[in-house]
Image (cartoon, rainbow, N blue to C red; front, top):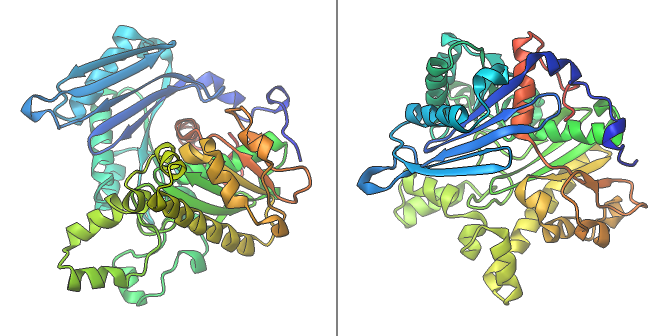
Length: 428
């Protein structure tokens, strides 16, 4: 298999041209990211971020950054809440461009972290949908409240276009029961919605589909392992465009070693620290989510800094890297066993797309499984999708840049048009 040139790939989204652009919003607890996207060509027309929302006490200022037509505007202003953040963003569109009135906005898309068992695909937002997302806050107390607030504010300020919620968990809603069920008391699990939900689903779905498109294959014919490696990291096994397992669970804490999260850990560690270190629930939460992973082991979570420390002979940094790779290899092997045949391993997100050492280390020693990385292809210049495995392997190893905002924009068009997306409609 080889990459099909862009000009020779059919564009299944060409019909979206009549719909105009989509404004994608990602509301965090103290930030608002936004991007105006062309769902046909995939380009970001404009993008920006409002940071330090609600953190302007004591004389500190919020930061607004807006990028359009190659020009980057940065300002420090007071941003007391998400309402003001969106007003600032809309003001910059009006002042710097492009004017939203001229952009032909077809929909506003909202990234929502947790859809629970309620949502298996994108949904046009109404008051009932907002209430149902709000009811899922206990499953994602750090994320869903900000997502809900962002939706409410945007619906007030942009009330003349449809709004669509796109869920990080939706792609994994079709996991088989043996993959999503935890082996605990079934009544407790049912009462408290305890199961594997998975996250980064928009990225995993996009990348699995993009692999098929750039290879000129049907997504239904491919078995793919997607490794989304950023500060948060997750793996998935995708068979014929349908996920059969993923590494994150009830929350984004489970699975791979991450920038600041521990990933898989013996649950009894929590009991041990509570009993013997006197740690409470909140302290344990901060430990495992904010003070663990690569940061907890090496003192840094930027992989460029980690590599610098390794090159200087730092033993803690070297061990952190080895632990990170060891966990990744375990998941690759496990997912290869579940899939039976692996056609492609796709690296994506910040670390996956840019760190040649991680990609090489994950595949080292796997030649017996038909998996290897070609050193020259791996380290060669390139920022787009590319094959980095040698010609003899039975499994292609690829780098596929993720575009979550584009994936959200396209799902918005499908939802507004009344086309419930399926696993077959995933190509980037």
